[in-house]
Length: 388
Image 1 (tube, rainbow, N blue to C red):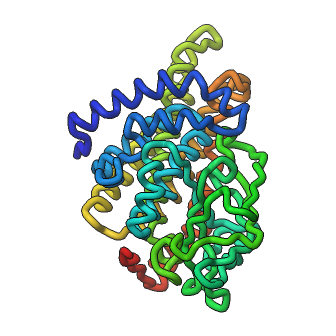
Image 2 (image 1 turned 90 degrees about the vertical axis):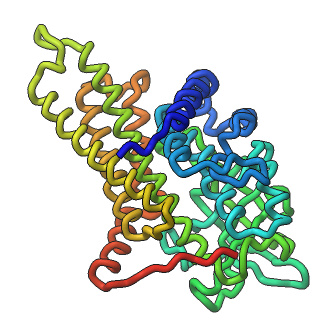
Image 3 (image 1 turned 45 degrees about the vertical axis):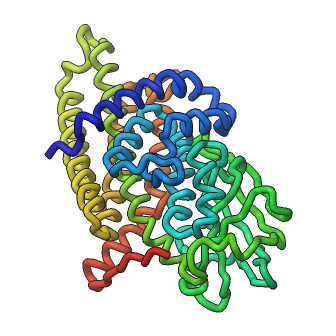
């Protein structure tokens, strides 16, 4: 089944042209800087790319999921996981929560300038002692009059240093686990908010940060959705995040293979092109088959997701297998480059670093296996969170 219309294909072409002109020449500098400049968010906003799936009333385009798939695939061709993460976390995480759960006033305050690229958002859930255990959030938001007083810390937060606001998971009732969690929008300039940039193996163009909240006074009106429903909102949006990461895994593997096919068609050894050696030819055949099979699976899940299916198990399966696929393919592609694969002047070195986070972010492979096992063995079921 061909999921892409002529309009989707035209969008892909225009987006690819934009990225080649505006992004690729700057990627190496951004990787070195460890962050993206604000002007690139503004350019994405001017082009409408930050509001692909968001409502027209706030300045978005309200397009179908396949435009998001195209966007994600083309972004991955830039070969910078940090660039993809920083741009993607803004609409894909922060603004997604605001769009689905926040009040109209909050949407006007954050969505409109966010879609324009004038405000940058981040999402702060993970904590130093929690990791993938979302229910174990310790950051507290205790109500005092018409404000919450927030204390705690977050870590591994994409856009954690340079964002203007953070959609933050907090415990409004510390005596409870899941039922005590809420989502609160915390502005960067509120007194008591501080951040420190983390030094990472990969995703180096992203300003991943550790955040501290010290008696931060946040208006009650900044509550995103209903108090006590935060855990369920996070779980609900994990489906789209994991589908996106599965799609990214396939896209990274596909781009690595594309680069490798070009390289082995030019490289010579023992008097002939190395793409004539059977061992490499068969590896290419194996990898291309696995990529195609996983792509078909992911595309079918996007079709079902657009039709309204709640795909907790399937999205977990897709993220698990496709991020493993990306690691495996990129490892084998680097091997085909030989010593050049280890050199920063060639694309595989950065790919090798960046792909590894796929099995960690958005739920580790171990957590995904446990979710799948609970549904397959313990017959556990999950229900979608109701919209606020």
